[in-house]
Length: 532
Image (cartoon, rainbow, N blue to C red; front, side, top):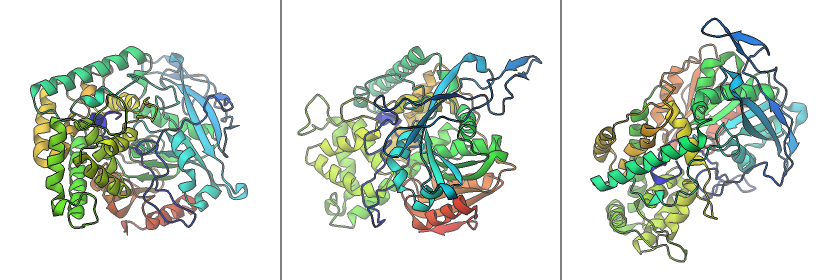
């Protein structure tokens, strides 16, 4: 996730910035993953939040029978989270949850929470728990940076609560490799055996480092564990029922929660859905095809407009291919940026991929391509670095580490390099510009902990109505996945946004209006509502 080869997994959604009049501009405010620097809430300079220990969800505080007929100890009864001021109207809390909910004796992990309290306390409904995606995206940063982008009606009546999932950012973070600059030099779409060997060596070394530095926590970072954490957080914030909004990967957390805790849901919105029934190959294939289609649409539109910075006489796709082939042979210099870095295929690929998440970024990408054709890779770097988790000071967030730590437990993968090569051959035909996606999860082939989740449909049997939002031009979570999830869920209802970009809530007033009515008043949108 933090280097170019890892960039095609589901990513955090960012709302567009809105000025005072409420009209979106091309710049995004929230940049948890793609287009700004990660900001850590509850930093050392702020008051240290008090800690609450959270038991296994539903625990009685004594013992419970285990599979062998014996007993398994459970944690003490839950206490409410202790909130402390952490600046700018936000409050922070830290809770501790079992590493292993089946065996609390194995110890605990720390979860960090941040909330913006509802502005109208007399009309407060409760908490709206938010996960922005990833895996590896920080809900703490998302709420701190983007709370103001939610409609005022939502902010008046809900405490907006973001949390860093276990292993992510400030919540018992995993850390594998501190600096990923050298990783970016490796071609994510190898053309010969030497480049394949380099990719395999890098994946092997990365997995080894993760195992060496995080052996005591890697087995406990699956989405199934995050689901139990979500239930613990619901109890810790004192809500009788859960109101939840999950974007992108956050929809997998939500759909699995609906399966396990259907009677604990008040309202649930799943935007830019991952189909929980698909396997790793289906995941990568669907994304590669969707990104390919989005890139071609963007370049085709560019070819028809002389105002497009990469117009290229109406031959934008042909010029794009020529530029990428040139970069593949010889990396571009980064003018006016000191240091050894150059733009090779890895950074160029990340810049293109990241920019396709939001059509507001298309023009920046087109300008970066035009500058690159003229020999300057500086703008491509400015687009790729935030997407890869690289901060302006050269350090990296732990997005990549958290991504693999979760994904390798959630998706069984092949351990044969030949299978990845074969998939790349298939992608060369169906998604030639995103052939690199075939190798996206190669690191998982060498992971020290076997996958623990078997992909399966979610039914949410017994849950109240659940709203699923899908966008027809979504490159990261293809529209069909949202349709599939809405059909799988017994109480699912689908909102369709017709348009480009990843997720829908922050891109469409029509989607927001229907979603807000559901969150605030439990008014379920009409089935198959379509929004432009």
